[in-house]
Length: 172
Length: 124
Image: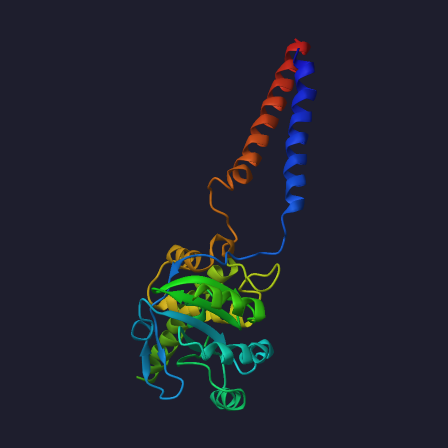
């Protein structure tokens, strides 16, 4: 009886391991963050880009308004790509674009905005990247769609035509 | 008097150094337990990416604010999810991961134990 049970258990254990590994094949091994989390936006203070005064995030983000919070930098090439899209989006009255200048040289950032235009209502400065971490950001560029002080959607990487039309659909 | 001065200088130097080293050690320990999310297969401690460098500064800042190691992990878990920690927590997604080794160890132990006594009985 015992001798019959042992092979049965061995087969069972191998079977379980096989099923786990087989199912694991279907998962991607690249980490994909959850993009649709409805989280409250962090409260933080940071310097204003133009006036160097301390800005409170609670004064900038009003409830019942839609914001696009965009993390950008002059040294980031994809930011240059998405910038024309932000410029066209800034023409839309329903949405306010707020910027976060990430680990940038002020002079380069000012040149960047002079060259490509400024779509931002307000720009915060993030000298060492800590503010971006409070937002749960991975790097530049990254955008957050905000309504009622909640993050509705997160766009990691540059915005493209599809994401812009999606945003326009959402804010209708 | 001079001896006293030299002694005091050495005392403070050694003392201050040890304080700083402690601080560094704790920060390194925490950043070694954090996964660098933008690089593959590296901890925040090992990586030199923008993301990792910012996290190192943040951990240092949080330690200065008086947060404990676990409080920092909790803070980052809220921001980035559990994936940022190298040690997965015991929950419904990970219980097989945690319990399987113990289970295999116990089954193995039972097999070894039974065989051992069987042999002894046979010898007798």
